Image (spheres, rainbow, N blue to C red):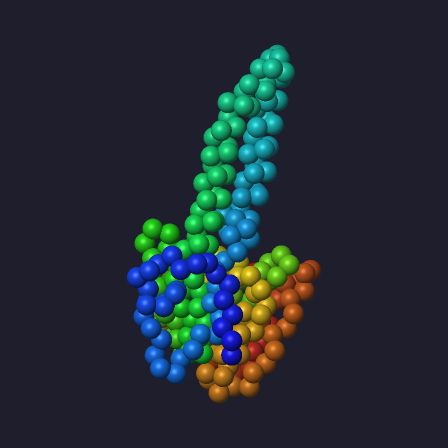
Length: 232
């Protein structure tokens, strides 16, 4: 199968293979490799759009207070202008975090495992063999991006803070690693589901299309046939 790569140029020269901490063993092959879409990451993880609306409301309220206290229009504009740089700085930080997170993250799916190279300042690589993955899901975001959460088998755990933002929201006690805001998410979920099923000797099932009104998650479970759960 041809490798499907959705990523950036090689920025980590110390890596023996891009996105991987060591060369793959003989016979193992990469099926897909990619990174989050920084635009989707900014909207859905760092909530840049929500922050922009919040700060816009704050600026409007600030200007309205000045006017209600008898201030002139010029005074109201000045009050807003004095606060605006702080607002732009806050939005810039959130947007910058989204860009850096996308540029330093590499998700890799092979025919035997999933690896996640994450971390802006300190890179960590999480190696998740299919034998340690109890279930995988999919939630569609926007036109073609998606989140793919991975439920770990047994007592295997990774701390939520070590994973964030590459973790399923609000699953803190037993954190679930998640491929966040992946471009062409439905296709990536299909590749993962097929590889996971084949590694366990199960019949490969097609992933159901997510519906815009009620996004659904396809889950592949260690118990056998996949089943649908409502997307979170």
